[in-house]
Image (tube, rainbow, N blue to C red; front, side, top):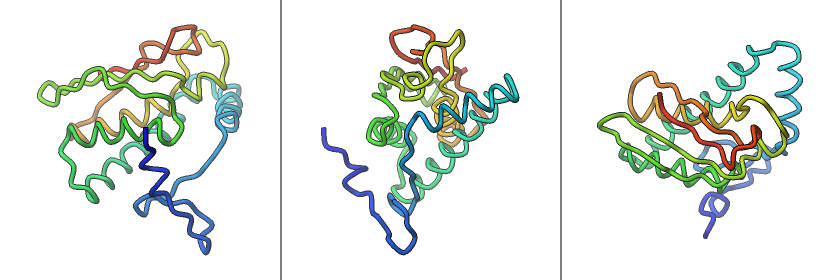
Length: 166
């Protein structure tokens, strides 16, 4: 599989940044984000989940809006683009299980979530960044406030993570 995102990622020396279609990206080890996650969970408990979710939501909605402007994608093409982008930027192997724009229905499976793998065992789902990104994307694509839940999580011992629009 060709990595189109990596192929078109540009290093801009004067800005010290990596850009894809004028959108800046940052390479960070999953362990760095998971350490941040665990530390804010210690301090804030369940409120930390919402903060991590909101961070992902910001990324998902901003990216969806930007790529809709740049590529003029249909709803289905936007979802497929974002799902294909996930593995190309190292967020695990994404699989679109269901997408029905008429019924505003979405289900995504993620194999090898780097967040779940770095986090280790958990009693609850922990992929708040991915859940937020998918919710941000769904909110833009369906043009309405949406909420995606993590139904299964690798960190809980499930074979993969599954996200469903509720």
